[in-house]
Image (tube, rainbow, N blue to C red; front, side, top):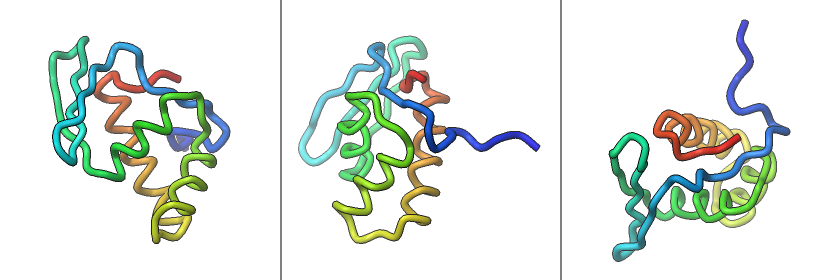
Length: 94
């Protein structure tokens, strides 16, 4: 069995290669390496802000459950899925 990504104590940080700009209520992002872009909603934008400094998965989940009305299990599942998407787009360093 393979381990889930990311592990709870893995230090995560957004990639310095990523470009981002706030446009209205959304954050537009681009992977320089892949030449692709996408936009983030308010929660995705908050996660991106938190990833500006090294942070663990557990700390991300704790921050989001403190700021939003979401239980820890749901937050963890959603954050893990979001982090996988960032990693696939070369937008996450770890």
